[in-house]
Amino acid sequence: MIHEVAGDLLLTRAQAVAHGVAPNDHFDSGLALALRERWPVMAQDFRHYAHQTHPKPGEIWQWGGVGGVRIFNLMTQEGEHAHGAKPGRATLGNVSHCLKRLRHALDTSLVKSIALPRLATGVGGLAWPEVRELIERHLGDLPIPVYVYVTYHAGQQADEPGL
Image (tube, rainbow, N blue to C red; front, side, top):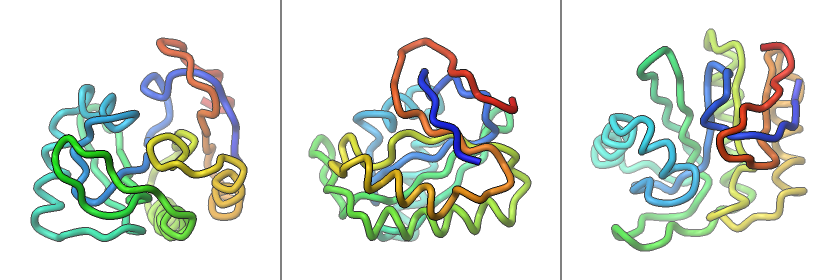
């Protein structure tokens, strides 16, 4: 079931977090930057993964780290970018492919709850109503709670029903 919540995604009590990135992302803006600051090893591991596999938009990469948190990096944005340059724009096709892969990963894992932002609507530049529809289509009938952080409130823990 999808729950739209307000608060700081970094304070979620969900077992996993999903967010949008670009292939070879440097995690230097938006939520990716906040995640890099909280889990610097995750960003280092992503850079190593990207160098080894050359991921493409529409793919996902999951990282399991400190304290049992799992982070799903969804490659919603286009292309590689140079350090310091802005990542490419997101596409609805990339978001849809990522959500299909995320759904499969959640169906085959022991993750019991997941939190995500308004995917691809910040740096990615997409319209929230279109992205919301994709989230509902791909994740709406999951048997675990899905918390979508639709409003950001720094330092405030969201009311996450079921946790």
